Image (cartoon, rainbow, N blue to C red; front, top):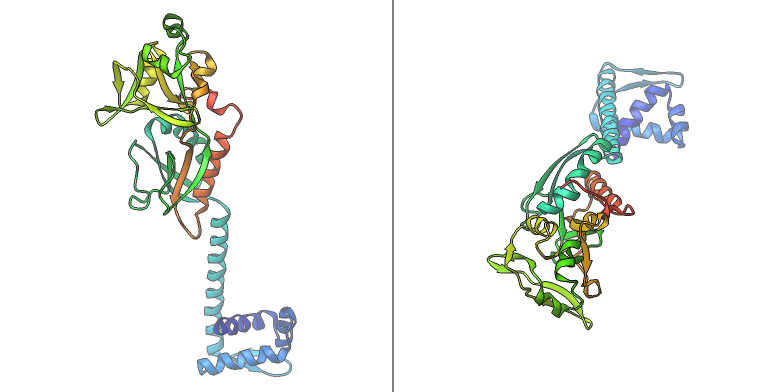
Length: 304
């Protein structure tokens, strides 16, 4: 720090034309300026200035050194300005991971407007249904619809999420509307499969969560297929509001058994813990949260 101050003082004295002018600009005594110059010359082992009470004159060595110092200080100023500008606006590349179905409907459609707003950010969206290794795979932001357990990650809640049982009005007219959980046994239920076995449906009953294996002759490991089957009137489906909200709003699907709805796995953005989070990550997470928080967002029609 002392060496830098000596150099900046040397340049300032020449720019202002006198030790006293440089001292006034810094608010210190001229003697302090003189001591810094003396220390600089002593450290370098060369005379930089010829000083009299009336004027300053650069030696040949001083003139060459001044040119180098001015260049270095200008480059330092440019570097500081660049860092300040980068911290003030989002720049760089973002690698984003999201579940396939959710990503297609609620992440991909928002990226063009995000990039238009932050023109110096590029985005690579990776859609898949496995739980990615955020740190190991270099993911900047991962969208997860689950309860967070990994303490090495930071999670920011983007939106509430809950599941509902839905069917078409035509199906309910033909087969009746279930009133209790026991009524599910009388219905065709469209279930999700995982590794060859059916995933249960979770409800809140008498103050506790219960998971039921429902009657189903049509099972699939792809939620989009279950959604399509439900829209075709093939049975009841247990789906997230982010997927079926627009269909409910449009009257294509109706919810049943709402009184048994269990707390859902909410929607989070997760990223590696960092001391200084890049602005591009903060900007993207804030953009998603603002978008999802708009009134009626989940019931608006979304491209699938």
